[in-house]
Length: 91
Image 1 (cartoon, helix red, strand yellow):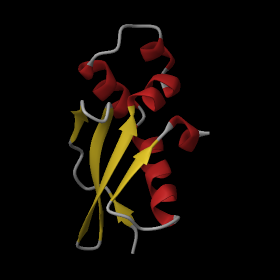
Image 2: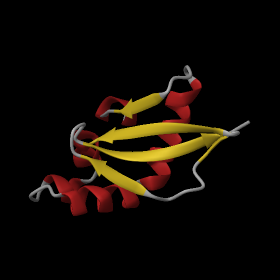
Image 3: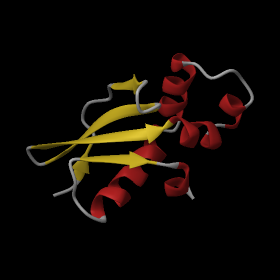
Image 4: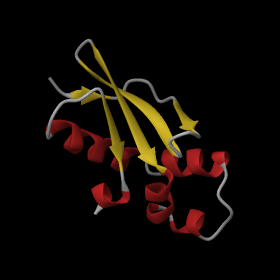
C-alpha cells in the first residue's frame, strides 16, 4: 500500500518551526513536519525575504510535489508516529 496525501491542508507549527501535514497509509494517519529551514533553502525567493507564516505555507504549496516525494522516501525507511523533514532530506 502506498503513502497517499488526499488532504491538501497544512499548517504552521510554531513550536517546531515547521509546516505540518498529514499522509495516509491505508487506514493509518501519518504526521509529517517540514522544517522552516528546509523550505527556506529550497525556495530561493523565500530565502531573500523576511520569513512569515504565510510565506512558509506558500513555499510549501510551491514545493508540494517534491515534499511528498521526500516524505514517501523517508517513510519507507522505517515507520514511526511522525517524521520531520530537514534540508538534508531534499538533497
